[in-house]
Amino acid sequence: MIDRVSTSTKTIERPKVQENLDTSNDTPKFFHYVKKDQIIDSAVNGRVVVALCGETFPVTKQAKPGSPVCPDCERIYRGLRKK
Image 1 (cartoon, rainbow, N blue to C red):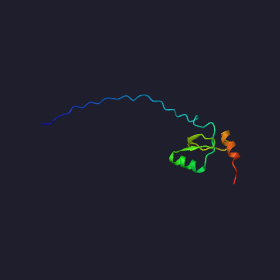
Image 2: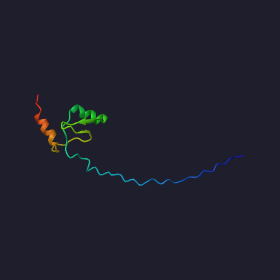
Image 3: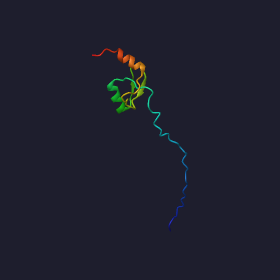
Image 4: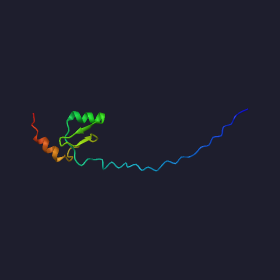
């Protein structure tokens, strides 16, 4: 004698999720001065960096020539003594 198991299937509806793929707003308002070793560590390990002005953030973008620079970072950088 063969036992027959009755199975049924249901369709589960996924909720509608709209992903925002617009990356035009990803660009920071200003780019900041950060120590080189912190940039590499943040890019590789996702750690947060501290800019000269005190702002903290993970490194996600690289500044291109001509990108706007944080005025506070610029002022502090120019005040540092060059060796």
